[in-house]
Image 1: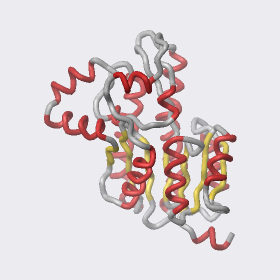
Image 2: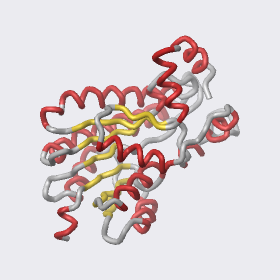
Image 3: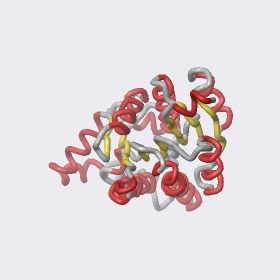
Image 4: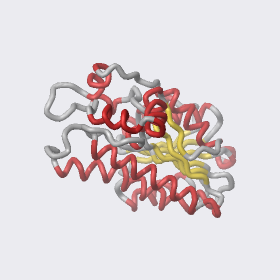
Length: 262
């Protein structure tokens, strides 16, 4: 336990699969102590077994619940110090906005944005107590320009982007960096979600549009670089890079393209 107390610490939500799993593996392999948080207990146990022995703890929690955030962080860091809190948990949401079930829209907002707000608020005192700390948020290329057919998902990622920028300025005096990852289509289980009103999933739609899938391991390396670096937003994947370029230099062309959706 004494050795673990001196390791740098990462707490990651959505740690039971996808980006969270890949980031946890990379940081653990590089000597960090990792707190894996997710609503999926079985997923957490599976990831914990993949990591070096004694390098990870599991915390079953729902990011929408402030009390669960407080309990999980206190359990992971009883001495009040965490180097990186990675607000990563999220869900996909696609389909026409006007036809969407309002409860599905509210759930997407609650997990993708309100959960990030709760995480940032709960993490502040741990990060402030830790020199060189960082709050890392998962945004998306959908936060570069609004995406038809994924309106509410896109809106939550714009919100995460805005919160990241605001807190990076606000918390600078506390010695806390605030960063975001803005990946395009990453090969994770989120792509298996069905597009409402169709028999196709998001993965099939992306492939049909001729867009690339970025390996999740590349996102993990980008997370490592973001934590160490000075850029507020880190775009990941060719689609995200093209969108960032087009948003600045060819906004009308991007507007027409994004209007077609995925």
